Amino acid sequence: MTAKEYLSQSYRLDQRIASKLEMVESLNELATRCTSTLTGMPRNPSKSTSPMADAVKKIIDLQDEINRDLDRLVDLKREISLVIRKVDCNEYRIILEKRYISNKTWPEIAVELGYNLRHLYRLHDAAIKKVKVPEDVPECHY
Image 1 (cartoon, rainbow, N blue to C red):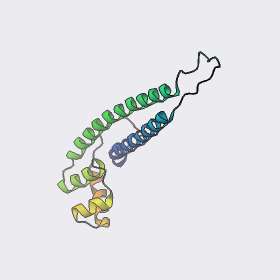
Image 2: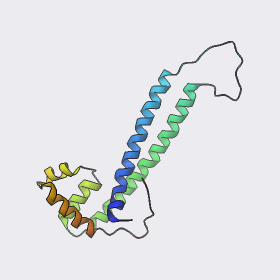
Image 3: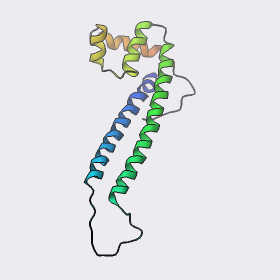
Image 4: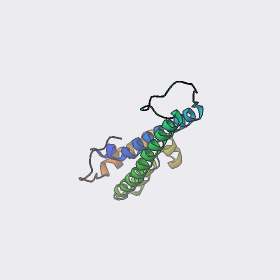
């Protein structure tokens, strides 16, 4: 795994969490629209008792998954932060932290630090070369 791939993991995981939160919102809307149909017909005993109950169960399962992902994100950002702290140049550390811990865009970082984008990209390339990815890091694909 390259240094850039390693550092980008938290951003990818953060995107997945945001996507799951959108799914929860969508399921919540669906659950509030669920209505039951009353008929005199006998019910299939293997069928679910309520579409609302099914939706609520899916929401709870997805929220549990999101909570696990959030725990992993916090741990991953902590790990990445420790790796960034080992970079010996303060300027490089700031750029790496803003990009990979705070998930800021290149233009945002350039404005905050008072650099033009080309200079920022050069500094980033140099900073990436200073990052030492731990050898025991498993391949993760977030």
